[in-house]
Amino acid sequence: MRRQTASENYYLGERAIIVGGGVGGLSAARAVSDYFAEVLILDRDQLPDSATPRPGVPQGKHPHGLLVGGLKALERLFPGFGRELRQAGASPIYAGFDVLYEIPGLDPWPRIKFVEQTYGMSRPLIELTLRRQVEHLPNVKVRGGCRVLNIIAGANTGAAIGICDRTRDGKMEILQSDLIIDASGNGSLTLDFLKEAGRTPPEETSIVVNMRYASSLFDRADLKDNYKIAYTLPDAPGESRGGLIIPAENDSYQVVLIGRGDDVPPTDETGYRRYAQELWSPTIYNAIKDAKCLTEITPYSFTQNRWRHFAQVADFPRGLLPIGDAICRFNPVYGQGMSVAAREAVLLHGLLGRFDRDLLSTLASEFLTEAEHLIADPWAMSAIPDFIYPETTGVRPEDLEKRLNFQKRLSQLATRDEAVFQLLMEVRHLLKPLSVLDDPSIVRRIEEEIALSSELSLSRG
Image (cartoon, rainbow, N blue to C red; front, side, top):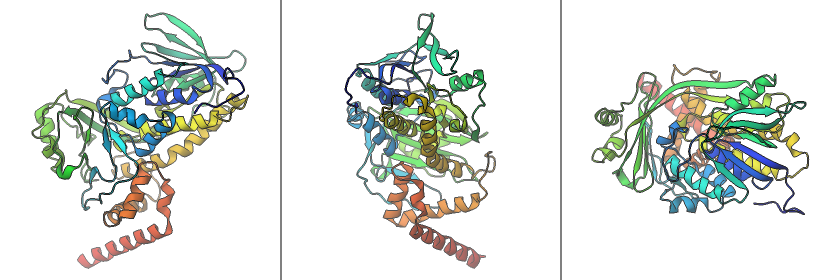
């Protein structure tokens, strides 16, 4: 993917600094590595040499999904990345064949194999595999144990020109930079910099969901009909309990149980198994009832989906880009975060590929505007279902009931029509835009489903 120029020493800048060594930061490092003489990744954690969770990623002990669209993005940045995951122990997954979606009131969806596949693995394994790929790049350095304290502004320009950090041995240092990418997750560095520069902070769209999770690793699982993944959705809006079981490396399985509000999954093993047994479907409980629990049961709370609209900030500072969760944090139950971050990195690489001498003056505006478009579809796919619960707070679409009804009937149609099911999966895995579901032939069939349901309800009444 390296751009050939008259001189291999011709770069957009001398140094790019990436704050955060997670999936978003590592992907971004690859995206900029062709265009800066040095790329430096700084992370506050001491980065492990094995696939183990780290303190700075509390969600790392919980299952993570890599959507097919996310894997394809990582393959563009790191050719052969899927092969590397498999060699590291990840389990191949065909989204339309290996996943059992248990939706109350619906028959199972068809089982068909797509050409593309993805993988089941732990979050630490995907980070470790990515980090090893990045460390092979000659101009990229990864430094753990470094806490970035603030971004430094140019005296006359207001541009981001460097960072101040505390090194692993406690020393303060100043590092100059031509581009700083905030992949720290919470985005506080970017927000603080905008505030110090006197710029208006970005507007935020938030949806408060108050999700509660508890996860553990089991030595094996006995899933029915040779499925590899089972996802039991709650009987919403009356119930909030659900669960997911997904392969990790070394023939182990990750299990997460889900609740909302005051319905908190237990963290003791007896209570945890009982919670699984009380789900409306016995699939997950039956899969683990004779399996050994390998780790402690770890809780996690997710309060809100949050989308910061940085593209609307007038005169966004030169030399600074937020990426990944710093821009948009998705409800993890939909498994979109890593994949969207990887796709943003591909977007960044494409913008840098134009190699305009003054590219850095317009990069932030162009990247953040394009990122808004990239985020819109996955946001809509997760936001609308969350609003089925009355206690969810946020700006509800005026046509919410219509949208929820459309999604429900679309799911019903997918149980009987393999083509519709495949299209639905391709949209959910970020392979096709959400707009393809507005095709007149599909809309007409959905309207027929709604009309038929209304007639049945009247006849029963």
